[in-house]
Length: 524
Image (tube, rainbow, N blue to C red; front, side):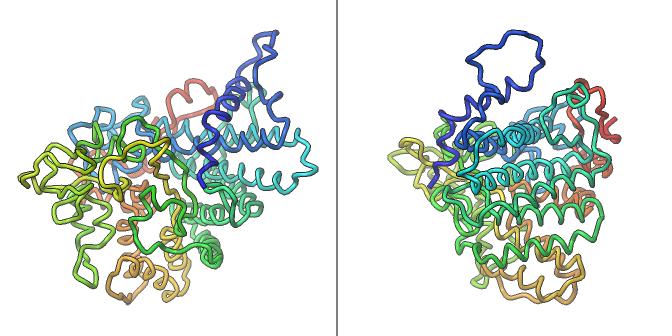
């Protein structure tokens, strides 16, 4: 059932966004429009609070997918992708570690995250104006749901930007409109942890509406926050706490790896047992392509202005280990469209030519004689590959959700947290081997914790290529510089600064508008 996020578009988001806009301006007029929706007039019923909470979900989309600050920036520097000739100058400079605060390359992420936080604060500040006497259970759940999103906001801010302002209520005074940075990056993690703990305590294990945050999602992200804090800040004591949270998710018995890896990236298999949290999306881009809101990073003929394609390093890495049957790893086959791999919409790679089209309900390539180049590859992951051709729109279909947290991630993070906290090697290895078993790889043993950690790193590449993960894994493992030396470009190697590029710069507009806010020191 996908009514939750889709239904609010026409009936909910407009009035609630109006109240957000109306409540954040200065009181420079004495007269008030009696028809204007504000926080003071909107939060009157439990249903209205529910509507306001619903707006937190689309606010997270910018964090995952915004092509001008979300998706591109989280994947371009990981080594998994190489930039194409279609990229704009702002993207080339970011890819090469030559962006500046004035470039605005990562501003959209900041704006999306503080939008989530602002909406959450507005809800928490106003929800108790409602009579909850007959809906106390709903009140508890909505409070927890709101804290879940605010916790996600501060979790992302902590590892993306570092030391940022912590805002927990709508601003009213001059000082509150110009907040200082938190006293430390650890304080930002503290806020994320506090919010996610409230979410974990108040959310149910299962929701009636598909896509709503659950106890499992909150627990998984709480563990991820502990893990990132341990590895980004070198606070090793948090590894054990991360392992505890991941173990709780595992012991819930609600989640498992889907048999077919492809099922994590098609509309036909959304909200499956591997998904702890996913954003409910529908096909409404108007592009008539199955790109799941990723038109800038797809395949010729389907995407346009494609900025990134799989790197030679990624393809070589994913091709290294074969299955027990001597085949390519299914994750490689589902991630990359390449010669010798799976056809895409019925078109083999050597028939791609100038792009895939659709004729008579089937996919056709620009070189049906098989004369297309066999070099390189394009992204296959996130395309609705179960379709025979580009989709024919019927109502709001097809649709393809954005999977944000998967059980495979829980298993691999659990293994890492157990290992790094000095836990049992066998227990950690069992979690890793579950992921390997799904890929039909040969049984593997590990002679040391170092060998197992190397396998965890490799499996995270195989599982999460092009999923906004690997770049930050490299940073938190302190391996980004080494990776660039190994397979980065000469320009990247020359421009990369491990201190400066650990975090993104604070947007220049925020610095100019907030008299108390200073730029992160390496970016000054």
